[in-house]
Length: 420
RNA sequence: GUGGACGUGGCGAAGCGGUUAACGCACCGGAUUGUGGCUCCGGCAUACGUGGGUUCGAUCCCCAUCGUUCACCCCA
Image (cartoon, rainbow, N blue to C red; front, side, top):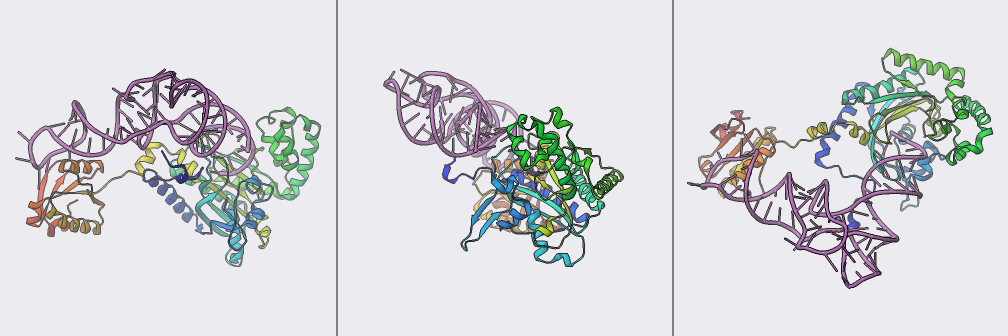
């Protein structure tokens, strides 16, 4: 058993070689798709001044109120491990004055995020997200592009068990007006709502609409939806987004009750939901955040983006696919018998590797048969056998592991003989 | 933070008051000398999360604790 003192912290994971291949695949695909859409990578620190997140994510959110890994550094400053990526990217955008350059700025990021939450399927304390941001455009095409990029990424990954939920949460103006309507509508039944909704009533009434308990109450179902009370500008923008998505043949589902948890969202909100996952089924979530850049001290520029959870994405990949992506194979396995052969063997390995082949040999003192077994284990098509006989003749025996044919080759000819 | 379930060798998994604590996988070796993937034979660790308690006796019962897991909340 694991010695408790040395166990990894709850909610973290060791990604072992059997998984790493799949991770590399998912990450490489994310980078590749982003580059194609002309998003460029930014790497920001994994920790920031706490204020960046309090301000950027919103201090009424659960993330800020109870999920941040915050610590005081030796200089007495309050630092926080990033709980999400957008705030840091926007901070960098402002700090490096990228608003003075070509707009909109299109960025993507990939890396670990930290949230102090109780572990659950699809939820970790250290998890990995990749995300994209378009800063400096309010064009509905930007919203559509970001959504279509996410859709494209999932498709190219081979993920198809998902649906896209879409909504508009309006701007501060129409949201305030709607909130008044909503509260007036729900006030008569406030006392009948569940405990959670009682607090939501004051804190975030939009959430009452998708409550699992109260969501089906007639009074709640008949409540005014924000999407039906958008101001003219927001309505036009939303119509634009839907129009472009239609043109792009991205299928979506309008979900008027979907609101997102981070304070900075305005107008477009969307989620890609895995249909075969557990309770934590959002694999990509995002939307527009028109006030955020200004809130973090920059100019008043709009933005749109999304973030996707890599762990959740990996969960949707078939197990055999993950295994195949992480398969442990070799191009050749070197079998050595006898002390004298070792010197020649290490030289042969060096040359084969320099040539670009993936080669290994036994260092565990295995016998001849066991070494052949190793060659099988790693599915090596060729075994390079070097015994004292070969060493004396400055040659190696190449054994085709499938046909079982063997031939003696001098080391000079080993490479040019293209062996493989 | 709240609630339920669980915690046996590297992994999976029986046992549920007194057993040498099964079995499967994996791993190692052998089945005539330097030739594998199948089969057969043998070996392997000394494993009952931790700390208390009940008992003549606890892996099996009780409590606590740590951890895992699922769900709520919320989110990727």
